[in-house]
Length: 129
Image (cartoon, rainbow, N blue to C red):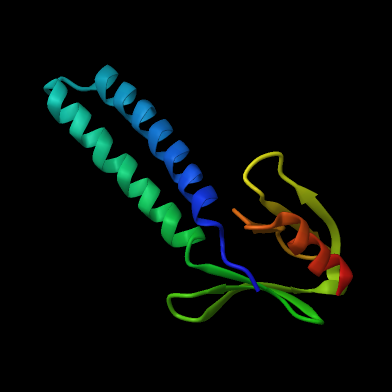
């Protein structure tokens, strides 16, 4: 059982927020005649909102490996977001950054385990079960 790592999650949020700010600021600058302070504040608000959305989609998850299944549980409402049987897992891919894993399975979309505290332990728990 593991939650996403706070430091890694904050890194994701900072990258998304900064990238979103630059893209939105350039877009608004090219296609709008608003004053510069309104363009800047609009880009800041939307980049903070995007970081908040990322925090609530990834940061509120708990990853659980049982003896039969891999589960992703939403902590806000204790609802099961995704699951798969361990025997359905075909490939476990490591992303080169951020301690994330992509678990491919026989049927359905791949499961993404973002910002793990210890990627090696999580991978061993999935493979070893």
